[in-house]
Length: 127
Image (cartoon, rainbow, N blue to C red; front, side):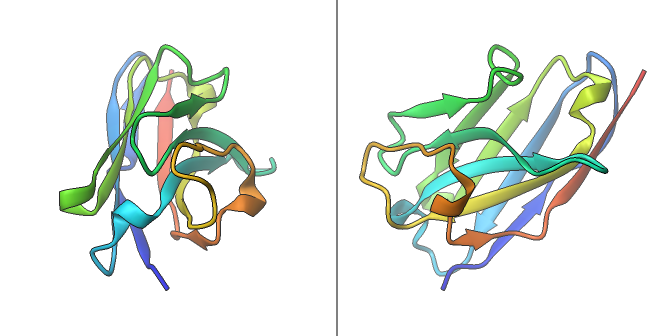
């Protein structure tokens, strides 16, 4: 069972940037497709971005396209979410998740596809 720990959240001004990191235990990040999801207060958790095990396939929510970039460094057991052009509506708790079952080139948007989840990191964007 893999454990995931997110970091890099915090307070940013609109238009600013943050880079979230998610470190996986076990040294086996390469076995998982990885995703980022977020949950704003009072809302359901929603998909943000995903990257396949191969690292060659990415998927983004419409709200993230052109502003966010997901990347992975298997040697460092870390997946990143670079967030630029932040908006107040990006305020949420951000979660990373690991998907063991998907094929090598799948970057799933589906939450139930992900077996393992971190505890989240808060991102707050002010006007």
